[in-house]
Length: 614
Image (tube, rainbow, N blue to C red):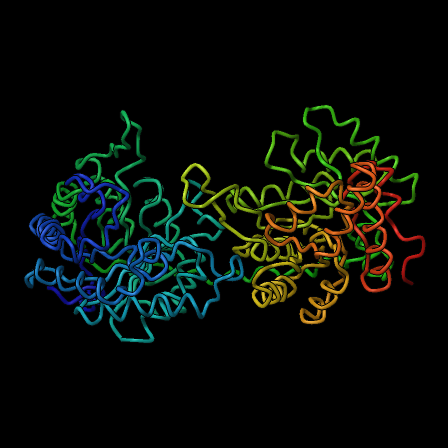
């Protein structure tokens, strides 16, 4: 039988193929090569691997298109060939199957976050997947396998894209960790129930961390849905052997695993990373012995009623800052840096000095360019001292979603309630590998995460027990080169639920007010003001720092002041410019944050206008 729809509708167990990437690597194709482009450059190699799996007993083979979506192909300059490469892959698989196996179009994740955890809209994601599916359909696939997804929102868009183009069967598969949850906290039960609502024909698990986790997850999935199930694990956990990662679960073990998942109720079994035709051959032997003679009975559990999302704690009850924002009080704050060592006593003394000067808030800035105490730990120490209330800066760059959630929960537990979320600047030029960074979730996604925690749930909708009471701020980059995009991102941040915004340092009042007029903020805006220390700093900010807007007239003032009075004169002029900006903004914004410059804390306090707006 080679009709995938009939396979799914029947009650027999069917064998799928194993890893394509593992086999390509074993043939000498290095990982820096675009494996999807091989459908055009080395079709005979791809076809031979398909044929090996068919000879080993695979009844369903997947096309070599796991990463053949426009987003991932763009990294290789191939996004315009999306439809072509997918069509070629389907044609290669059809030739290799020769009528002996069904051909499933393989579709993997886009490799970026979609809303609400990322800037890519659900509609954009659906369009990307539709392009890939269109190419696979043109090549003649019998159905689709959506695999290795960890974001259910993204998986749903992939399913909708395919089902919007055809009525062919779709198998939807997620990948989970050792805890049986996806990377952003969704359970296998959630995935099974939601997939059934999308109209897919089967649901299952693939990749993950090996057969044992897949088996456990499949048992739970079987109790949550009556859809046919699939299971395609890795060949165990990879182990470092020399300079390579080797999967050590052999064919015999995978055969034993196949027996167990079939007994659990799996209707499709196969392999993912590290599996080979020999693994598939052993699974095929077990399947032949264990074909069910009676229908597999599953009990569908009702969707747990749970509780309605908890209403967030009112803003004014979350923190002193929350009360000021809710009541429209003018907010005065100063930025401090975490200490370079483990002794935070100077930071605490600085905060006490701010309190004596009538400044109730300290922004604890996260400076990841040099070794310093973490901003989170510093903020916790400041909060414990109780002289001022901390507002901790938190960047998403180089942090995974689970780590971010853990940090936010830790902030809530330590008494730090105010957090300014930022994506974070790249650490250096992009073309150099040593400067590469990872952004798993950007500031918009983080704002959504924080809003979810305030409603007593993690991003997957699981209860966290007690809601957090975070006051969440976002950065407003009024000097961005693409002003229209920044305005749109600011709108998304507000829709995500931020409670306030903080600007980049302002050196031109009219420039900021013009941006705010276009952005139409619905949340209080705090303007950052920074005294300049020298002409060199002014020129550096004007010419070399993205997002910084320093007008020519300010640079000229600094030049003249330094010419007449040297560095002392330049510092005096820098403080004067900052004071003028702060005074002009007092009636236009909801607060001022001073970034200390010359004069340290005492100089920062002197920048605030004598009279703030009502």
